[in-house]
Each structure stands twice: as C-alpha cells, then as structure tokens.
Figure 1 (cartoon, rainbow, N blue to C red):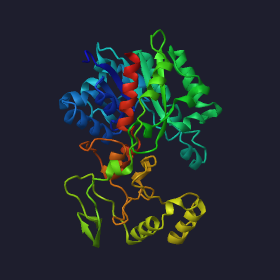
Figure 2 (cartoon, rainbow, N blue to C red):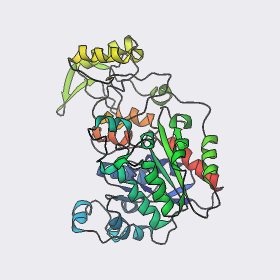
Figure 3 (spheres, one colour):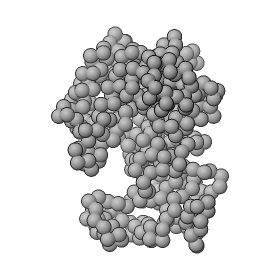
Figure 4 (cartoon, rainbow, N blue to C red):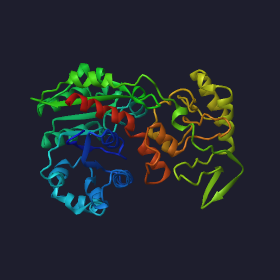
Length: 409
C-alpha cells in the first residue's frame, strides 16, 4: 500500500498526457500544471475534475494558463499589466502571487515536462529556410531549468524528440547547452554524447504507434539513486506484447460515406456521424479524396516507392511535392507517429477500412495515443488534433512514472 504519493509539477503540460500517465500509475500527485494555450488548459482542468476528483476551484488553481518564458513572473508573481490583461481572466487570482504561492509549503519531488519540439524536429528544420535557428523554442528549456533551480526537486523528467540530438541553434549542439545548464544548477544527467542512449520507442510501452522520444532524467546531486538505475528500469518496464491499430480503434463504430453530401449547421458532411461521441466525427471528404483513398488502399500503395507516391500526387492534383502525401493505417501494425499536422489534414492517416474512405477522427487519434475513451478535449477539431499530436502518449508516460517509482523504491 502506498503511504504517500510523490509530488510533481508538469511544465508545458499540454492537454495532460504526461500528467495523466503519472497520476494513473498510482504513485504520483500533481501540484501544478503549466500551459499557455487555453483549449489545452480547459481540457486538463476538466480532466482533473471528471477523473481525479478535484473541485473546479482547485483545478483552476492547479492548471495555470501562462507563458513560461516569463519565468520570474510565473514563479514569484508580481505580474506585469500585460500578463494580467492576457492571462488574468482565465486563471485563479492566487497565481498572480506566483507558483511558489500555489505550491506553498508542499515539497516538490519531481518536475516533468517536454518543451515544444518543433524547433528540434528534423522535419521542422528541413522545411524552415533558417533551419529553425532563429526559433525561440530552441531555448525554452532554459525556462524549464529556472523552475527546476527554484524548486530543487529530487529529479526531473525532460521529454523531447530525437531531433534534439542533432539540433545546433546558434552553432552549438543543444544537447551541450542542456547538459551544462542542468549541471550548473546541481543536477546530474547523461553526458551529451550519451543522450542517444536515452531514446525510447513508445511502441514498447503499450502504445499502438512507433514514437521515438528522448527521455532525459536529471538527478539532484546527493540523491541515492542513479541514472543507471532509472534507465535500467525503463528497459525492464518494456512490454513483450505489442499493440496494433486494430487493438486501439478496431471496435470504434464505422463511419461510412453518405450517398449524397449534406450540409448541417453550416458544415458539409460526407460521412455518417456517430452522435454518441462528439470526438468521433469524420472530416468532410470530397469525392476526389474518397477516390484517392480507395485507389491508395486498394492498390496497397503504402509500399510504393517515394517517386511513385510523388507521381501519384502530381497526377491527382497537378502539383509538385518532395514528400509522400498519402498513407493509410494498417490494422495489424502499429500506427506511425501521430503528429500535430493532423490539424491541417488527415491524408497521412487514412483509416484502414477501404469501405469507410476517410481519415481518422479526433477520438481515434486520441486512442492511438492511449488517452482513455472518456477523455474530453476542448476547442475546435483542428485544435483537438493539434493537442493530441503534441502530447505524450498516456501509457508511455505511465511507464516512465512506474520506472521512476521502481528506481526510488
């Protein structure tokens, strides 16, 4: 029986994937969750009330809408007039006294989080004319460091994309910057050349998708547990059985094309709708889209060459591209990495059933990320896809939490 749960602060909390995994492990309790986009804050607050028995008042106090770049204001309060105007209305008034006031006399055992990854991602750098070198998100880890330095937790968990291993904003490898920043405040992490040993695939942890991420732990100097302990336990917590797309979404109600496109509340509808779950509503698909999906799945075009895929896109649209534009999920395989690009289109996430001729719904994307079926997301559909694609899969987060607990035990 657990006598006392370890406490954590979640930075860059998003819609709550990391927090949900840590809390559902049964070993951890969240003291505060910081996020700067309102739909994600509303989503996480609602989850704390509906699942974790927080009052609405406490949920509003714990889930803080704020820009972490204003780190001094976040920690110590004394908000500027600009911050009050921008964030005051959607926060509990107490946060204007600072995160230290919210935490009060509680001991912060851990700080967890994953700064936005777009600046480190290889795709992001490939599609930006400056290779993301001028992107402010390269340095958001510095705000993470400041919060760690203030609260001095026993350890932190820092999650990010594998692209960070090769990112060099300002000409200096970001792994060197991160290592030095944490070392300077008294935390032991892997050395920069060892960061590659901290790469784990969520697929090995009960998640039906391939999703490789760097899981960096930093341990306060003087603690009795070690980096080696944690990483050994991460490996031991991997599952032998693996989940597939069928395991995740195979039981979802099918959504077949309508004979005639209809218009409802100003929106064109091309497919049947399941009224029981507002997140299981398909995007509108044009007749051309559906024909593409039928051709793609019917001819098993996932396995065509890159050039054949490019030629197919040119034939359909008359436009040139350097990348594949279509891909269907396959029932008995894991999904590829669920990404925030789903907010723009679902052509790389075509449903595997050739009779449905559509891309995946918000609910299906969430299930591929192992969010529970009763998890409710706030905001429009595009925002929901975005927050899900940017999240940490819940089962992966739970495995990280379990590994951390075993290490402590």
